[in-house]
Length: 209
Image 1 (cartoon, rainbow, N blue to C red):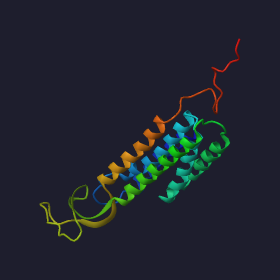
Image 2 (image 1 turned 90 degrees about the horizontal axis):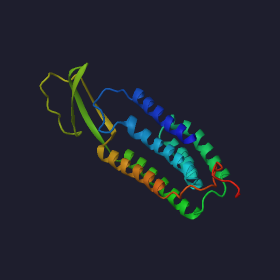
Image 3 (image 1 turned 135 degrees about the horizontal axis):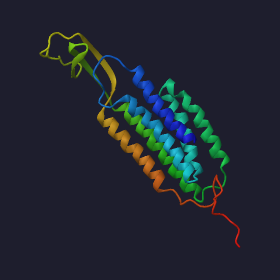
Image 4 (image 1 turned 90 degrees about the vertical axis):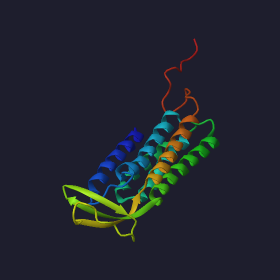
């Protein structure tokens, strides 16, 4: 349930980013309102996978990632609450994994992949200069490398121009996507089959006749 809450909070974060980032200028190659919430949605999915597969280390890793994700934005501080809950639940779940060391290594690898995805997204950025011509209701944007004069296009004088730094790029978005999918695939495919021991007693457990 906590994992589903994290996924829902990630969707709400995307709406928040979309609302507060309505600045004049051409759109980024990768939508910030999708790329950043994707990191948190992956954390929620890891928590769900860890709970379904009864893997304590994965649940703890998801909780730790919630706390690490607080550094991205002040709006992400709300993820501290589900992060702490996941850590407490993981600490209380004893004897659920038959491969504690293997699960610990897989959890560490998943954390590394998710953190690397965030670093790649926010580091593989670029700066750009732009001009807007036409009408404010239907502008035509011209983007160029800063320092290179932007030719005046047909449509009249520009009514707006600007400089944007830290613009998300397709390369960063593709690397982020690959790393997040890698974390989910690694965690899901290495899970042990469900048995009768876990957080919830199995209905199939019954005394022999």
